[in-house]
Length: 136
Image 1 (spheres, one colour):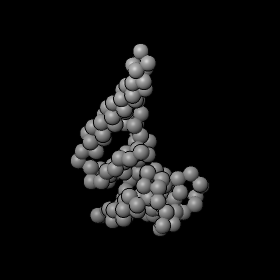
Image 2: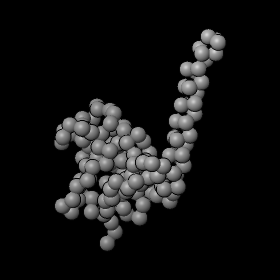
Image 3: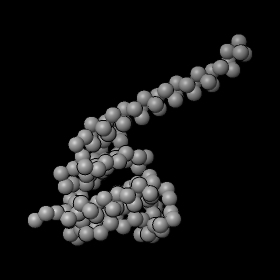
C-alpha cells in the first residue's frame, strides 16, 4: 500500500502536465487560425498580435478563445516607444530584456501593446515603422 501512495504524486503531476500541454496546443491552433494571411504576427505569454489589412490588432487568450484587447490603424502611426511593462512611462534601455510594452502614438491616440520579450519588441518597432507610411 505504501508503494502505491509513493507513485500518487507522479500520477497527479502527469495529469496536470498533460492538461497544460493540451491547453497550449489549443491556444496555438487558435492563434494560427486567427493570424492566417496576416503580414506580421506574434504569440507570447502576454498575448497575440497581428498586422492585417493596415490594422494592428492584439488579443488575449481567455476561456478557450482569443478576446480582442485593442486595435490601431498603422497608417496613422507616428511614433512607437519601448516602455517598461509596469513602471509608468519609464523608457526601456537598449540593454534591457524581458517583459515590456510598445506605446503606439498617432492622430492624437495612444495605445499600449504588451510583449514578453524586449528583443522581439524592438524588431516589431522597425517593421511597424517601415509599414506606417501609406501610399496616397
